[in-house]
Length: 150
Image 1 (cartoon, rainbow, N blue to C red):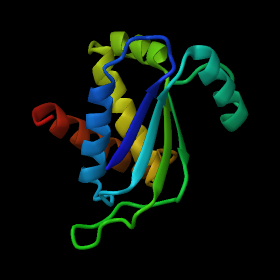
Image 2: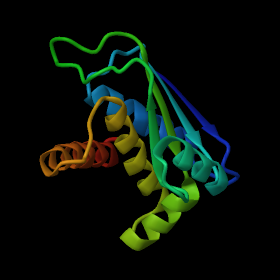
Image 3: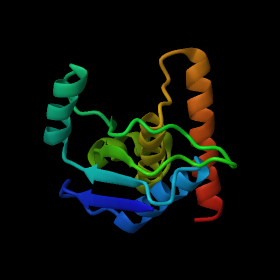
Image 4: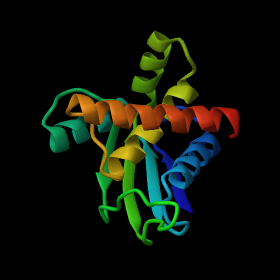
């Protein structure tokens, strides 16, 4: 799996752990082994700019996803085709604030956000209650299984 993580945030982050959770999530969702994913960590100013440009909302957010080949989850008998999943953009300073409020580490929050972004790239959403239940259920399962078997 081709996962590239670039930290442009100015905040020290365990990049190898983010790469590992992304790869774990891709395997869990039966993504083709040669599919590519980029994860970029940015500061609040850059995230605010992206948030306004793409979501028409002001201020920084925790995660944004930019799909490329519009791939969907694979199945046990039929993994996803090869392709480029897209980009996940994370803001570690926003993640740190959320982590503190949730009572866990910033790295754990970044794991959650990486999986959240990955699920968006695979077509999941949380606009409707049923969609939210499915997406957040998958997110929890993937993060928990990674925490148990990194």
